[in-house]
Amino acid sequence: MRLNLINIQTVFISMFTLFTSCELDLSPVDEITDDKAFVTIEDLEKGRVGVMAYYGGFAIVGVTDYASDDLRYSSSNRGQGVNVHDWTYNASTDDMGSVWDGNAHLVDAANRILEISAQFDPEDATVKKTIAECLFTRAFGHFEVLRAYAPNYSANAIGIPYMKQSVISEPARLTQGEVYQNILSDIDAAIPDLDQFVDGNYWVTQSAAYALKARVAQYMGDWDMAIEAADLAISTGGFRLAEIDEVQQIWNDEVADDVEVIFRKEILSSRLGDYYTASSNQDIYFHPSHSLMDFYEDDDIRKSEYFGKNDNGQDVVKKHDGRASGSMNVVDIKYFRVSEMVLIKAEAYINKDLLDEAQAEIELLRSKRITDPDPIDMSIKSLAMSVLQAERRRELAYEGHRFIDLRRWNLGIERVDEDVPSGRQKVLESGDYRFVFPIPQDEIFANGNMKQNEGYSN
Image (cartoon, rainbow, N blue to C red; front, side, top):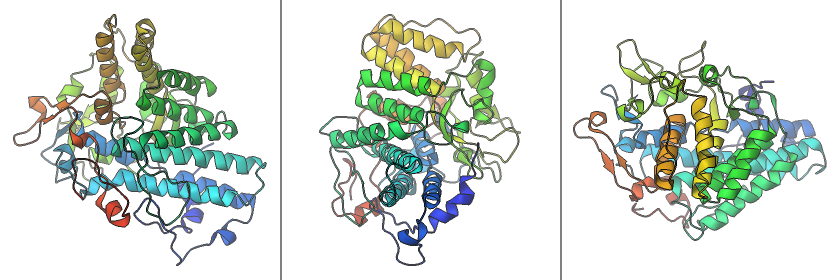
């Protein structure tokens, strides 16, 4: 059953006037106080729905795409994402705060409902599910911030604050070891009380929790955990990869519930595709890069589904251009897909020197995307990693992975000449500090204990 989260959201939003810093404040003006808003289990259920309404995810897709090598600057761009694309951003660049602020709102909403849930019967099924979904949400929101604003995983490297309460405070950045442990603890605590499967995959399920755990384990380099969690993400909900003739349905939001999409948010009016082409006047802000478009075999279904032409014959990003019927660029955002889990397993097998197993995963995915796939050579580890990296780029383009993947793999960016107009930036060296986004300036001002990332000034 598909729920219209936007209509119910108003009950929840009336509680919150949210401020900019991670320890978001509750306004004393024009609010519905907790004791008046949450009297019954039914009230708590509405609060649970309200938390779901705070899920975003557009920002990390759009901003990391701007910074990657998967887009090329358009002459009709009027400044959208240019600082990010040229790697000239700093703590005051508007786009740099979007991932932080959106997920801070999400985490704060989850923490408020967790605190309210304590006043109800802990054995009630709705209460248990509410707590579980909010624990997952807290882990999800923190991890989105962590992967954008913290360097590659090392237990003692700098992380981010981890907010477990909705309080006014000035939290310091924890070590990554501490942050990852908090994330994994919240996920593990959530799993037993989550539904195994829900119609439409619009709610948090056990499969979604395992998918998040697999992604977290991948970033940590805990390859055994990554394989186990990715397998459970697929099997628990009974999911499978889309066949070639079903791939279009993924991006038109018409695919069957057990195919490909593990967790998504129903979008009724927001426009993910506006990061690339404006729905208002069809101005192109960024074209797909030639280096990416040329990366696909001719009989790869992804080539025709991810890229298109406008009426003037110009290349456009098609992947998020909307449903078969409906408004341009209005499409559900997919947080976790089966193909990502397959690729996580393949990367894990490579790092465990199980190259045959890794090749089997890659060949499975390619058989579902390419009519007559070319042979791949994964006989030695370096070749296997190159194949894996190429396939992640092809499959997960425009889903918020490419830029961060390059950082994870300690690779740089060198845009090809035909993707770089005169005067635009072409190279970002491996290890450059700009692979980690700056902490937003508003957060620095609001929190005296917040330390800026290396390379940026306060």
